[in-house]
Image (cartoon, rainbow, N blue to C red; front, side, top):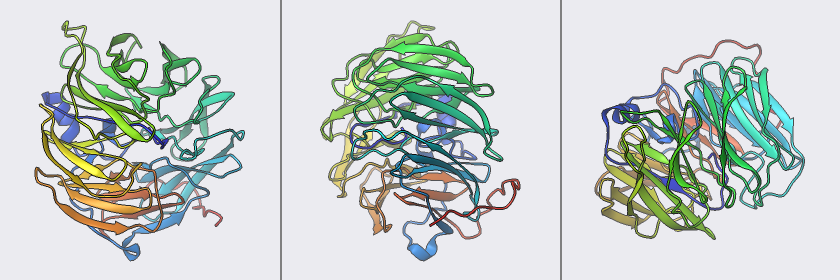
Amino acid sequence: MSRIVFTFAVAAIATFSIGALAEQTAEPSGWNRFRGPNGQGQSEADSIPIQWTEKDYRWKIQLPGVGHSSPVVLGGRVLITAAREDGSLTLLCVDARQGNILWQKSRSLDLHHLHPYNSYASSTPAVDAERVYWCYAQPKRYVVEALRLDDGQTVWQADLGAFESEHGFGASPIVADGLVITPNEQDGQSSIVALEAQSGRVRWRCPRRTEKTAYATPCLYRPAEGPAQVIVVSWAHGPSGIDLETGKPLWELPVLKYRVVGSPVVVGDIVFCACGVGGVGKQMIAVRPGNPATGAKAEVLYEVPLPVPYVCTPVARGEMLFAWVDKGGVVACLETRTGKILWREKVGGDYFSSPIRAGNRLYNISRDGQMAVLAAEKEFKLLAKFPLGEGTHATPAIADGVMYLRTLGHLMAVGPPKADLPTPPATGPSQSIPQ
């Protein structure tokens, strides 16, 4: 998701097929969606420091408002959204090397009710080599928009109709095989919609049942046989698979008992997903996806014992899954094949951000802005804990050896001073943001 923060969570990881292992371990050139390539939240970068101070940032800029969306990065550009209380929503394109604003586009939203932990800028954009895709919604209109990456000019807009939710909007799109997959699971008429990335034309629309608005960002499962699957999780359907090319529902396991906000993660042939209520994770399961091509039926492999995450999406390293509980910062290391708990320790703090992995380290930021760094190992090690100076609900991004962090009102970059970052093509004079 992007990030609406007040409830829910999910996660993932497990045994590996060759193709899935290659997708997980290959070092990406960018961080193209919420939690990076296929939502894994992983990088093999070994250049991120264990601890830093304000003077160590490569650059730091103030944003034109606040928000909970996470940064995405591609081709030397960082994309992020921010919003003001008057409903003004802005998408910014930032030079990854210097922090200069290359372009920014604003849209005006009608003022409407939000959960106290939500914001008008909770949806994380997605990006490919040509365009950036962002979503924004108000009660009467849910819009998906594509902008040219080089100059921010509108390529197309798609109106998905009304959006009904007691807590507001916060779902995030993904881009896959030339399609923009857009979750639209709300309190009104729900669906998953695939839009053609070049034109915005609807390729397919998969109707969904409704049981409370869901905020999970989809990911992909590519089995050795059969079509690629869009993995989507909601209270009504539980974990489910949709044919990426046609939008045909392939399988579902309606076994979840509470609301979903966190995002599924797929490693090998296991999906982990979770749900909760009242700010507490209540249920987290490991699932084997169904596959009509082989006749395999979807099944629950095991349930993870409490406490489990609600908002924070877990992250993996190999066959270890690290699940970060929102309240109190209890972190568990699980054996993904069996669910066996290797360790469970309390780090402290309350969290809406999801942990990410950089090499053999885990990074996560508490709601009040404390960065915690753990060893991604079979033995618990707290490597560092230090303040960032401002709270956050967002998840960091890593690209080209640099970490990009978004606090409530700022965007900053930390990494090696001489990192060889790509330089985006010139788009005219850089812009500054009014303070």
